[in-house]
Image 1 (cartoon, rainbow, N blue to C red):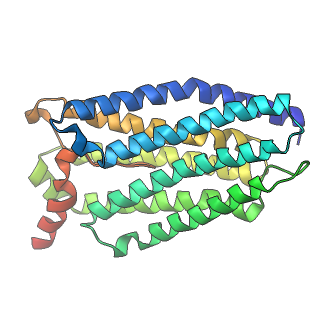
Image 2: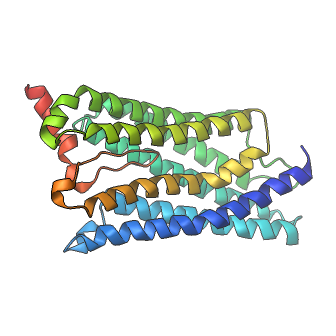
Image 3: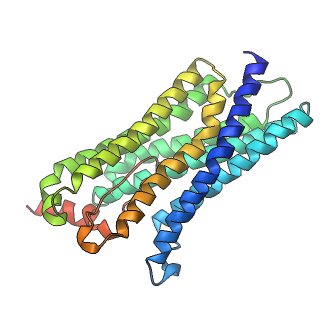
Length: 291
């Protein structure tokens, strides 16, 4: 593996993350502005899933971005300092944290859509727990590296690091889509015609983005390409931008007149259900079971 190529990949990662993080920050700020401006008691929104996810993803992605810049300059100024491995471990900690936030969010949404059924979330919860263990192992392994060692963790940990989130996202999105399709007639009767088409489109688009990214990262990891550095560094930004785009779409829809709203359930690596359509995840399953 060419050292110059690895250095070039790191430079590209720093540049792209620096370019895209301000966009994420503006999107997150706009989302929070719309959400807080529509409520008379903003303090009640502190524990709102949308607010929590927006703040946590923005904070973790920001921490990762700052560490990436520090790590980049540290590599040039103090290339022989073993402390660079500690910075790399911290970067991976926040990158893994972003993915975990997305996994927890989509599991929570699956739980709501399936009428708070615990049995349906067993598999993704186990996958999320497994990924947290894998993430801890990768972070610790990186932290304990010595000079001259490879920055890439062992193959089994890297395989688990991309496969578990991919399985969790695919499983949850698939079951959410299936549940919506199954209750389509009931949902359209409750919420009005045309509600489920944008639901399915957003579900599939968001799942496709994350799946494609996961597969590309898997290929880069399995072949040992330095491109995995680029993809790992950009993962927090990707998670944030995808979700902020969804959040903004929801918030802009909320600003429309009440008669024009068509409650939409949206999901992705970190998914949401707008507060005004919680009935999709509660009334619809019950109505379906009562029919």
